[in-house]
Image (cartoon, rainbow, N blue to C red; front, side, top):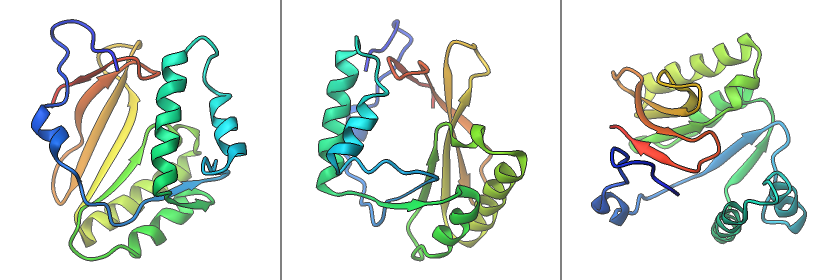
Length: 171
């Protein structure tokens, strides 16, 4: 990942040495792509522009890593499935809900359903919602935001190129 300019900061070395313990990984999509199959991997690769060899290489590495320990994939509407997934979590550990663009494709009721599930889930146990969307700084970049429960407001933690060519951590 390319960092632009001196003001761009990389992830601190000590953070990269940390290995989070992950108890469960669940993906929710109307039509999830299972990259543990050759058909799924080829489909995903077809979305990368042909002249972007570095992105294809990164995707190959990500697919290989995912195949070592695949997540559970749920087919369905995130607004309908997320409350159940959050209700099934264990007590104690932080649950992270990550989405980069999915909410932009949902109708207003779906977005409200996801937000309601997060609010309920955040009252029940530690929760982080990491999401992406339009940057308040520029239309040429994407903003990564996080909200933690209990109690924290939503905060921008990074900016990035829309397609991941660079990343700037700000928090």
